[in-house]
Image (cartoon, rainbow, N blue to C red):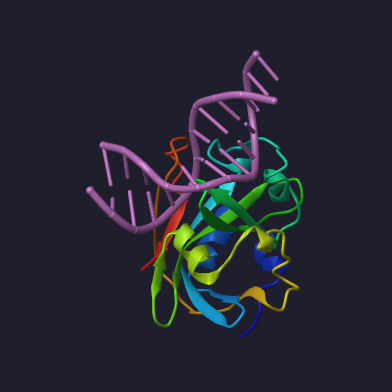
Length: 163
DNA sequence: CGCGCGATTGTA
DNA sequence: ACAATCGCGCGT
């Protein structure tokens, strides 16, 4: 299957979040279809980690196509993909993944099930041979809502679910 | 250097 | 409705 390259990731985070629906995620031997995403941007998004530049969010200020993985509530990891060009801080959170045998619903569940930890932070998803994304389902329809678990920027409907 | 809290989830 | 659980980020 055709691997997604930097021209795919180097776009507006909202655009990439929509486009990732129906794409295939490959992590080692495991392959799944992305069913839910959320976009986060720094400059105009109060809810984003990159609203302020910090050591943790610095990767979101870097070039697109890298994994951004952080620990939340002291026990769950969340997987993001950095989007847009350098100094345009943004990322897409992977919230839903459909595997052949199970549908993982929620970012914490995905990382726990696949064994994704902070060890996998900062991986180049374009060049890596173990962790990357490929084309998947051709035509995907979706709906959008406010993002889950945040109190700020509720007006932004940047959560996307495939139908 | 101390302390409150979070892009979550399972259980009551 | 709430506990689990800990590193980050901001204030002192």
